[in-house]
Length: 254
View 1 (cartoon, helix red, strand yellow):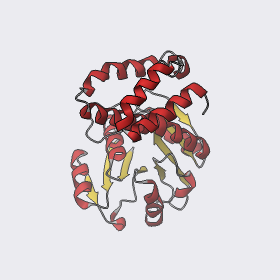
View 2 (cartoon, helix red, strand yellow; view 1 turned 90 degrees about the vertical axis):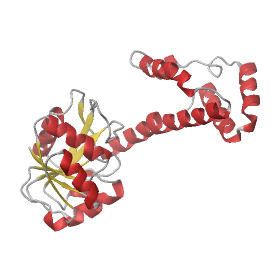
View 3 (spheres, one colour; view 1 turned 90 degrees about the horizontal axis):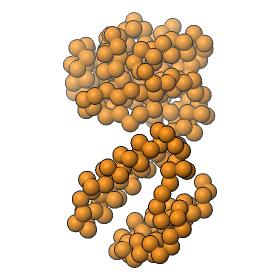
């Protein structure tokens, strides 16, 4: 496929690399920041623009990889009737693109992506589309860049999935950040926790999180919990989070 990438962030960069690796042709990169668009276009050996009017109209597929609140702006300025268009947002309806083309949809990669990745990850892709023909094209495109699952998911399902993704990725990473800060303050080496982090994540490939839960909270080990809370007295924010999560584990409720 001949592809135009609208957006120069992490998602557009990584998907662009995946498309190029799969043999697709990136014919143009659009970005509001001319320098960022030019740098990304250089990676793909193609042209760039930061003018809406200069976006080529003869590509096969237009990937809109911009911030959620910028998708409506793209739809307002870009009209490519008959072409395939899709955005990459989990929390935005596919109908946000209906003024761009009759063939529109969603191409949502469920993965934490960074433009500086050296090794491109396998990415499960969730798609949605305005019609069956568009869905089939998006599915074929997704299967060309990943060995992971390609799943059809409507607007409500993607939104719910995004909530879960934020919890398991963004929230978990914030806990890592808090633990790292705590270790620095206490003269500990956060790197010593990495084997535990890796083992905990690896375990989820074979058993459910409920079966994998360990620690003083699930054991109802109140003496140990009380000792931990004493240690956390000088970290009131972290202590509050510790208490909330401990209560959640012991209560077993969402």
